[in-house]
Amino acid sequence: MAGKIVADTLEHSTAGSIATNYVVEGSAKAWCSIDGDSTVYDSLNIASTTDNGNGDNTYTFSNAMGNATFAVSGMSKSDDNGGLRAAFMQFSANNTSIATTFFRLTSQYDNTNGREAEYASTIAHGDLA
Amino acid sequence: MQTPEFKGTHLFDRLCWAKENLDGVQSDYRVVYEDSIDECAKILVPDPNWMACALQGGILPPVWVYWELAKDEAQPDFKKHTRGYLLHQTEPVGPMTEEEAIEYLIQKDVPQHVWKTWNEGNKPKMVICRKEQLPSTREWRNAWKIAEDINATDLAA
Image (tube, rainbow over all chains, first blue to last red):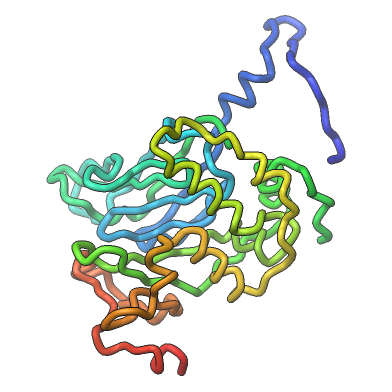
């Protein structure tokens, strides 16, 4: 590909240097934002989302991860206007929630019931296959 | 835009090229399926950037590559993929129509026991529909099921 630079180290004039594997290994390998119907607003390295039920979504990769021990984080926004309510995300507890080709998250509110998020965003860090 | 010659290029690099150069394609197709009698119907939604790659051609690997990786991961002693090169070194597939892309995605992301036997049993386990054919509200979402009276003739119509 055009513009390819092969380097093991990046060096700043005053701030020091950093090995490029920090960049390669530390960059997010997938990210995605969806609405309450699991329609994707924008993404990288996501092939599909699956709406498994209220607030329960599976995100499937295009480029699989190298192992099933990658890290996932996410934030979601409450879909109601009932005041200040927590809307947090966690791995689906009663199902397989992580594999090299997907991860499954639920958005929940303070009463722990799965609830649709008006906007749910998530990021995966780890090694690619 | 012409797809660069991507043979042997890391799949992630191809996806990054697509992200930078192709506009996302928001498909109206949805795949509704049931993979467990204890759970409600699930709805597969294609990613717009992935759909752009599928329509463009020359980016995505053939679907059998994912099946091979799934076989590896199903081994009891699986720790990490050792055949990831299949994603990167297998010649990418050519451009697909939107319908072909949905077929590909079903074979990639819907459980095999569903799509291989979708029409066996009392009612279809999987239906491809348009977004507007789904219920317009999320009411009783956790109770949604594929209609009992739907049949293959209806689906073919």
